[in-house]
Image (cartoon, rainbow, N blue to C red):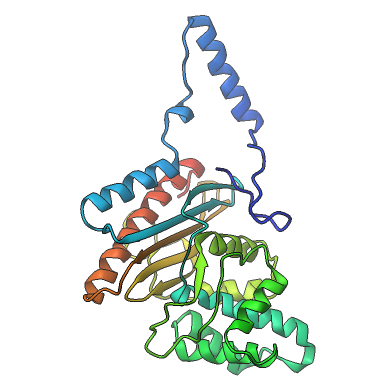
Length: 314
């Protein structure tokens, strides 16, 4: 299940890595077991994996009616410290992208700017539109940036945004499909992306593998409403979050990077992606989106508890 999200393979599965401390611990346990004539599984072996814990929690949410039978989910967690994928559930399935697409649009702009040289500049006005698009989730600003990208890449509309992304990073945006602008009312159902696309994008963003990654992180880190740390009681307010949420009458989602510190002050970060998609539009949007947002928050809290134990987070 371990997945190395690097620029060489974008999803190749490396061999598991065990450090010296883990090796000696395992060796000590094995020696004790031999002396006693019994098999003694290590504490780590007895502890449920994070993936199994997420599966169990989502199953309970379904049993309680928080997530319904006509709703699909996808989950992804990548640990930057351990350099491994911890959760991969329906990662490759394309879902409605909604507003989670907006950082992709920003990246397409910066790719275009890199190609165009002095013909396309990151002006103060465009920076304001970028911030409105991601921090405030402005659909009007998103259409404006998409139109600029299209203008410099053939003038064929939203599809040009997808073409730019796949021309520069085809291994990242594998299940991404961009075919429509986001209307002012937010009713966009045809643009698609997978949880794995978000995970690969966040990996590249964190490791500065894309142009202006630092600027996109800055904008994604501006304080705003989120479903990953806000109103999650066990996540301290000191964590930093770089994220984007997405909402329609059929989709509730969140993707981002959670950055914390361990007890020795060292940086520890991981990605979290949670998606819940309904088969048909809900007739009770406010109640539906609130309940699904809280379902994602519950999974996020579970993930943070696991990371806190693994990395001694504060």
